Amino acid sequence: ENWDIFEKVMDYVYSHSIKSEANLHPVLMSEAAWVTKAKREQLTEIMFEKYNVPAFFLCKNPVLSAFANGRSTALVVDSGATQTSAVPVYDGYVISQYIVKSPLAGDFVTAECKKLMEELGIEVVPPYLIASKEVVADGQPAKWKKKENVNVTKSFHNYMVKDVLQDFAATIVQVSDSPFEQSQADTMPTVHYEFPHGYNRDFGSERFKVCEGLFDPSFIKESGGNSMLGVGHVVTSSVGMCDIDIRPSMRLKVIAASSSSERRFSSWIGGSILASLGAFQQMWVSKQEYEESGKQSVERKCP
Image 1: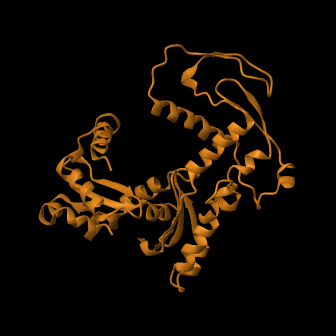
Image 2: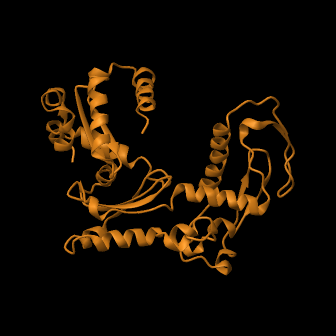
Image 3: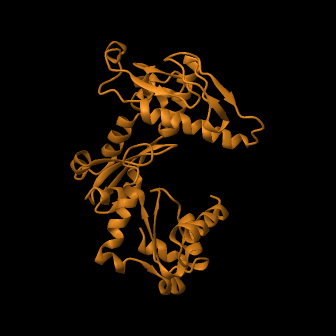
């Protein structure tokens, strides 16, 4: 939404990462499957008017994720921070009317980790607050000293706390192979984890509870959980909405992607594959086409 911030990011990329003039390189960018026409045109205008790129192309994330897996037709399940979506891709095009979304995603997992810490009485201390710490035995209170005169914004502090919780989730949290049952979870091996301030302990069955709400919203304690779709229902709902003749292709080719799953770079990989194809070179929106047709050319050449 904030185009000024976007331009600052692009300025940094060109000056510090690419270290080259913007007008020397065509640019392919990925986008969410539901980005509006107005935003696409605004982005196109910025890239040509401010950065003077020789050519530009916009491609939707699910399409690139499918390409990264050698598919042009697939159902791409994209689980990011704020939502999980199932996006049908057929012959390289997103079927937007059959997209299904759920708010249960990465931020939900982080929030569940925070609740678990509160239930267990574990203080989440970000590294920037720690001046020193001592080694303590498993399950014993942490012995650490806080840095003095730390002057940071509340948003920075919250970001650093979230970073600790996300590391905990990536290290400890595991999805059960079947619907959660306490007796079965108790038989699973524990995993040891040490927090930045030195507190450490083993985590057992509780690490399987964190993600259960993603698949079974009724598992969520707060009211309203039952009104949200679990990941499984997101997939089946999207497939069920598709035309009957393409449903088998969707069921057999389900691809997981995005930031809270391990295939977080699939859009990047798909973009590199697409941009390297000889046939793709005629698909770019060129500088000449932009000057002749304006920013509306992105809708015509980048469906």
